[in-house]
Amino acid sequence: MIQFGLAVILLFFSTAAAWYEGSAILDNHWEWKYSTPFSQLLYGEVYSDSDISQLDYFVYAAKFQPAFPAIMAISSLYLLILIGYYFLNRQHKRFAYFLAILGGGLFLLSYFFIHSSTTGGQIFFYIWLVSGILCAVTAVITYFQVFNRDKNDIAN
Image (cartoon, rainbow, N blue to C red; front, side, top):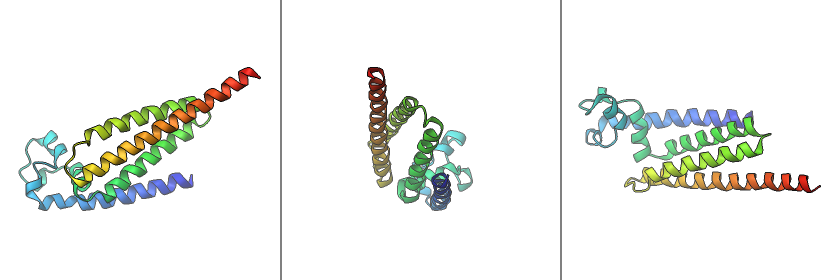
C-alpha cells in the first residue's frame, strides 16, 4: 500500500507540473499547428488559445519539457504493473501474460515515437522501448519459473 500511495502522489504531482509547463503553448502561436492534435481532432484548426484542449498541454510539455511528462509516464506504468501484480500475484502465468501484453503495447508505443524530431519524443521512444523490453523479459522469466516449477511437481 505504501508503494501504491507514493506512486499515486508522484503521478498527481508530475501531472500538475506537466500541465502547468504545457500551458506555455498558449503563448506559442507557431506551435499550434504541430502540438495540438486533440484540439484539431475535436474542433478542426486552432485559431485562438480558447480552442486549445487541456490534453494538448501535455503534448506540448512532452515535446519540449519532457521531465515531468516522463515521470508521469513512468509512475503510471509502475502503478499499472503494481495493480496487475496485486490482482494476479497468485496466478503467475496470468501475470506473465499480463506483462507480455503490456510489453507488446509498450513496443507499439515506442514505434510511434521512433522518428520523432523533438528531444521529448526521443526520450519517450526510449522510455517505451526499455519498459517494453523489461516487461517482456520479466514475463518470460516468470513464465519459465512457473513452467519449471510445474514440471518439477509432476516429476515428484
